[in-house]
Length: 193
Image (cartoon, rainbow, N blue to C red):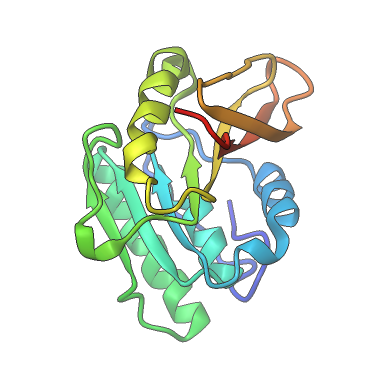
């Protein structure tokens, strides 16, 4: 697994041994970031259920200003930190504008001084999505109140649909079959709750 584009393209990413994480595929990440295009440059991101940190690291490689990786598994969070160091070295920059939070994504709250995100990447274990997704979107209501134009990119298996109240699905990539991963792009519905 490697960074698929941007200034750190080709940097290998570490993942913890075992089945603690299911890394986002290179192809899906490439499709997501091709779709995002210029929206990534200068953006602040949150990578929730970060796993290896692939989404946030890809954003950094493509010009994001910084962000927060949230992961509750200590081994996975350690891999995110190692990957962040490697990407920072490749980019020739200190990663002081990034942090790795060892926390449950549902309980985590950004510090007031970090501000809201422009992009939120959500990649939870697929078997937990049906239970987690409604709670994640409800929690994002207040977390992103200061950034109503924030874009939420949610990775999910093909065949699964999400229709969170108050949110609009702008597009869907991949997921042509039940076994193929896909990504849905959400934005807060105007006039929504």
